[in-house]
Length: 119
Image 1 (cartoon, rainbow, N blue to C red):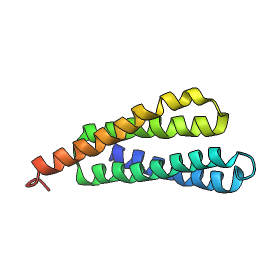
Image 2: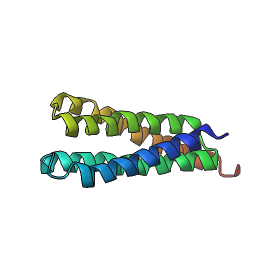
Image 3: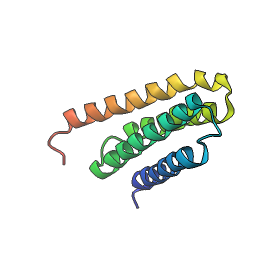
Image 4: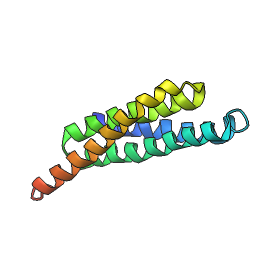
Protein backbone atom coordinates (compact mmCIF):
# COMPACT_ATOMS: atom_id res chain seq x y z
CA UNK A 1 0.00 0.00 0.00
CA UNK A 2 1.24 3.45 -0.84
CA UNK A 3 0.80 5.38 2.39
CA UNK A 4 1.61 8.73 0.77
CA UNK A 5 -1.05 8.23 -1.90
CA UNK A 6 -3.58 7.44 0.85
CA UNK A 7 -2.52 10.56 2.78
CA UNK A 8 -2.89 12.59 -0.43
CA UNK A 9 -6.36 11.18 -1.03
CA UNK A 10 -7.45 11.89 2.54
CA UNK A 11 -6.25 15.48 2.22
CA UNK A 12 -8.04 15.84 -1.12
CA UNK A 13 -11.24 14.58 0.51
CA UNK A 14 -10.86 16.99 3.43
CA UNK A 15 -10.16 19.90 1.06
CA UNK A 16 -13.32 19.20 -0.97
CA UNK A 17 -15.40 18.80 2.19
CA UNK A 18 -13.94 21.98 3.70
CA UNK A 19 -14.59 23.89 0.48
CA UNK A 20 -18.20 22.75 0.37
CA UNK A 21 -18.65 23.49 4.08
CA UNK A 22 -17.21 26.95 3.60
CA UNK A 23 -19.37 27.67 0.56
CA UNK A 24 -22.62 26.29 1.95
CA UNK A 25 -22.35 26.01 5.72
CA UNK A 26 -20.35 29.07 6.65
CA UNK A 27 -21.70 31.66 4.22
CA UNK A 28 -23.65 34.15 6.28
CA UNK A 29 -22.17 32.71 9.48
CA UNK A 30 -18.62 34.00 9.13
CA UNK A 31 -17.70 37.52 8.09
CA UNK A 32 -16.45 37.79 4.47
CA UNK A 33 -12.79 38.15 5.53
CA UNK A 34 -12.94 34.96 7.62
CA UNK A 35 -14.74 33.13 4.80
CA UNK A 36 -11.99 34.21 2.39
CA UNK A 37 -9.35 32.91 4.83
CA UNK A 38 -11.18 29.59 5.12
CA UNK A 39 -11.41 29.33 1.31
CA UNK A 40 -7.66 30.03 1.03
CA UNK A 41 -6.96 27.16 3.41
CA UNK A 42 -9.17 24.76 1.42
CA UNK A 43 -7.56 25.77 -1.89
CA UNK A 44 -4.03 25.39 -0.60
CA UNK A 45 -4.90 22.07 1.01
CA UNK A 46 -6.12 20.78 -2.35
CA UNK A 47 -3.05 22.05 -4.19
CA UNK A 48 -0.80 20.26 -1.77
CA UNK A 49 -2.92 17.11 -1.62
CA UNK A 50 -2.24 16.94 -5.36
CA UNK A 51 1.47 17.58 -4.71
CA UNK A 52 1.52 14.72 -2.20
CA UNK A 53 -0.12 12.53 -4.84
CA UNK A 54 2.57 13.54 -7.34
CA UNK A 55 5.29 12.61 -4.87
CA UNK A 56 3.60 9.26 -4.21
CA UNK A 57 3.02 8.34 -7.86
CA UNK A 58 6.47 9.46 -8.96
CA UNK A 59 8.00 7.68 -5.97
CA UNK A 60 9.85 10.91 -5.42
CA UNK A 61 11.82 12.15 -2.49
CA UNK A 62 9.93 11.30 0.71
CA UNK A 63 11.23 14.32 2.62
CA UNK A 64 9.28 16.48 0.16
CA UNK A 65 6.14 14.57 1.14
CA UNK A 66 6.81 15.19 4.83
CA UNK A 67 7.36 18.90 4.13
CA UNK A 68 4.08 19.09 2.17
CA UNK A 69 2.21 17.35 4.98
CA UNK A 70 3.72 19.65 7.60
CA UNK A 71 2.76 22.62 5.44
CA UNK A 72 -0.81 21.41 5.09
CA UNK A 73 -1.14 20.93 8.84
CA UNK A 74 0.54 24.22 9.81
CA UNK A 75 -0.54 26.54 6.99
CA UNK A 76 -4.02 25.26 6.24
CA UNK A 77 -4.72 24.21 9.81
CA UNK A 78 -3.81 27.62 11.21
CA UNK A 79 -5.97 29.37 8.58
CA UNK A 80 -8.93 27.10 9.33
CA UNK A 81 -8.50 27.81 13.04
CA UNK A 82 -8.14 31.55 12.44
CA UNK A 83 -11.24 31.68 10.25
CA UNK A 84 -13.39 29.61 12.59
CA UNK A 85 -12.33 31.12 15.91
CA UNK A 86 -11.20 34.62 15.01
CA UNK A 87 -8.21 34.03 17.29
CA UNK A 88 -5.45 36.06 15.61
CA UNK A 89 -2.63 34.21 17.38
CA UNK A 90 -3.10 31.30 14.96
CA UNK A 91 -1.69 33.64 12.32
CA UNK A 92 1.76 33.26 13.86
CA UNK A 93 1.82 29.60 12.81
CA UNK A 94 0.85 30.24 9.17
CA UNK A 95 4.28 31.41 7.91
CA UNK A 96 5.93 28.25 9.23
CA UNK A 97 3.46 26.21 7.21
CA UNK A 98 4.08 28.35 4.14
CA UNK A 99 7.81 27.81 4.55
CA UNK A 100 7.25 24.04 4.82
CA UNK A 101 5.23 24.10 1.58
CA UNK A 102 8.01 26.03 -0.18
CA UNK A 103 10.60 23.61 1.19
CA UNK A 104 8.56 20.69 -0.14
CA UNK A 105 8.44 22.20 -3.63
CA UNK A 106 12.18 22.94 -3.46
CA UNK A 107 12.96 19.38 -2.38
CA UNK A 108 10.77 17.97 -5.14
CA UNK A 109 12.56 20.17 -7.67
CA UNK A 110 15.99 19.04 -6.44
CA UNK A 111 14.92 15.41 -6.49
CA UNK A 112 13.61 15.72 -10.04
CA UNK A 113 16.79 17.39 -11.30
CA UNK A 114 19.14 14.90 -9.67
CA UNK A 115 17.13 11.76 -10.52
CA UNK A 116 16.38 12.41 -14.19
CA UNK A 117 17.35 8.91 -15.25
CA UNK A 118 15.32 7.12 -12.56
CA UNK A 119 11.70 7.01 -13.73
